[in-house]
Structure formats: C-alpha cells, structure tokens
Length: 314
Image (cartoon, one colour):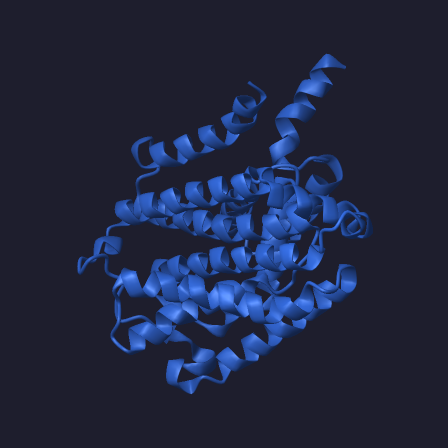
C-alpha cells in the first residue's frame, strides 16, 4: 500500500502530461515547451541518481547531455538519421564520457568532485566550440529530424510529445528500480558513510562509477531528444550554466523522490516561459522565487503534499 501511495503522484503527473494535448494544451508551441521540459526531466532524473542516490553533486552533467546532442550532429553530417543508429550513439556517447571521466571523478567527493566534473565539462565545451566542421561556436542546424524505421515520425509534434513522455516514464521507472535494488542500497549507504560501507566489504567506487555511467547514458538520450526538438545544436548545450539549471531542477523538485526531478524540470521551464512573457526583467523575479522555494519547501515540490498534510494536522 505504501508503495502505491508513493507512486500515485508520479503516475498522476504522467497521466496529466499524456492528457495535455487533449485538455487545451494541444497547440504546437505548448507541445514544444512541454517536450523540452520532459527532455530536461530525463537528464534531471539521471542527475537525481547521482545527487540523491550517491550524494555526488555534479556541475558537468550538461556535458553528457551535449555529447548526446553532438552524436546526432555527427551522424546527421554523415547523412545517417536512422534512430537504430542515432539513439545508441547518443546514449553510448554520454555513457562513455561518463566512464572515462568518472573513473577519476568518483574517487573524490564533495567540492573536489564538483570541481573535477566542472573541469571535464569545460574541456568538452571548448572542444565543441572548436569543431568548425560542426559549426564551431555558431552551432549546427540539422538537415532533418531522426527517422524511425525510415519514417519521419518525429516531425509530428504529437508523436514527439508521446515519445518524450514514454521515455521520461521509462527513465523514472529505471531510477526507482535502481534505488530500490541492492545496488541502490549500497549506493545510498556509501552516501551516508563511505568508510562504514568499505568496512562491510563494499568498495563504493565501482558503485558510484556505474551510477555515473547510467546517468551519462540518460543524459545522452536527453541530448539526442533535445537536438531533435530544436533541430539545432550549439556548444552552449555543454555550458556549466546548463548544468546549474539541471542541478537546481533536482533540488527544487526534492531529493527524497525521483519524480521530484521531473516536477522541478516542469516547474522551471514553465515558470521561465511565463515570466519571460510577463516582463523582460524576469530573472529579477525568478531568482528570489527560487530562493524562497528552497527556504520554505523543505522536501522540495515532491514533498509539498506531505508538508501540507502536516500543516493541516497541526
């Protein structure tokens, strides 16, 4: 019963996203906005696995997302647009970069881990800017969206919406399953006390590295979807500021539950858009709102229902 209660909010969230095109949110622009939020939600879920599961705060997560996007670019330039090739390349690109950099990074923690991931991300960012064959700093415009079995299904906004929703739900299910598994229990125990876990015979480093690789693969998938959503890829996809945005999505949503990352992504994307229409100086409002949310939403957006129930009993 408790598990069903925990799953009720994310399942309701996914149901609302599924119904969105039919309850007044079917305009092309709105669907594009929701797709962007769901794509960033996939990347944020991978980051939640690191932050909420392993206790590893990364400022290089956008590099993994950007590498997935540039995998689409590299294949598009070679006129390879079939999803059977593009998707594994994007996921593999993010996972491989996570494996190579994580082999160094996961041996550290705290500020050292933050700085190492930031350093690797900046290396990837400047490398992307130097790739003149893919537009350099000006970016690269795709010739077309990725094909599925030779058909351009992704050009249909409704199909793309449900593809993003399906992959978001699958990513959430994967993170929930990982954290509930023996692997996830060791990962969380190492977050609390790595020395005690080592004394019990578990080396935390391989567990953290595998979590980092999984998060990299998820970010690579999100990058491929983002490249298709915008049909344009630029080095700014790998910028540390985007990593900061993803990190705040996780924190705003709440570290207590994976669906918090999805709530955080939706909240920030939609709030940015709404404030941007209201005033050109929306960042002056957006910043204080985020600070207030951190101060008063102790469990993040995912913990808000429990917080309200507690206030009602009080």
